[in-house]
Length: 369
Image (cartoon, rainbow, N blue to C red; front, side):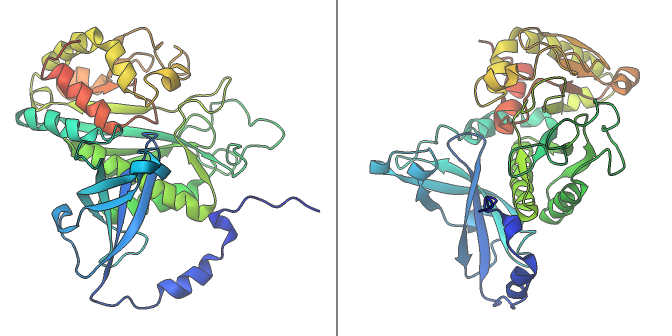
């Protein structure tokens, strides 16, 4: 008997689904999809609630609960965890008045879940709001088939060496553009501040950029962009991995480079403030490394080898236009004397709340270890 493929979204007929989605939605009900980060710190979960009015702000959505023992966030003997709505977006899948509701996770005693890093990030952003911190994160990811093999790669071999794939065009250079285009349009509909996208250095690797976002907005928008990507890839029967180095050998890994500036950096003469931030980042290099992936550096150590456009994980460096440095100052920024810096250390599976919080605590609040 022939082996059957694992079940995936691609095994269902989307035309059949469309028949049901065409059924008019009653005007007095709205579907709100509650979205949260699970116990891995990387995975995203969601469930839907019917409401009898259209919420216009997170505070309009009630606190809800879920079984934390099934998401790695509590024990079965005390399993209830609570979803506190914090950000609201139009739902690009159900459309109409329906919403995506990003939530923080809290325990029964009102303390934050271990993977709820948003609550401390809010504190840091509130303390630095006068400095107007802006962020833009370049989210790299890799598309996989259901068997875990990179999407579009030969099943019994490898594609040609890296070189023609970055920002490539053509069926022999890029794989999965339909998924990328669908994600981009869905993000635009949802109001996510997506700034662009491109094919990356490794075949089946892509990147989208979110930002500029001010303060806590960076983490909110990137997490919803990740949720939308998972939903879109589900429809195409393809897997998205944020593993920073899923393919060993002479292939690029995936990062989440964080572009950062304060108001002082963006104004005339701002290069001085950028240069002043770099020694502060150097002093806390290993603190940032531990906070830049969910395994406190173990995942990122497979990517930050000093090769493939990275600095070594144990070494700190900075330079103008240097993609092999920990911190890159773009050539145009150096020429203009103002702008932003790029922190190239965060891994693709980082929590953007942790990344942005660490950056402002180090460079603005001058915290030390």
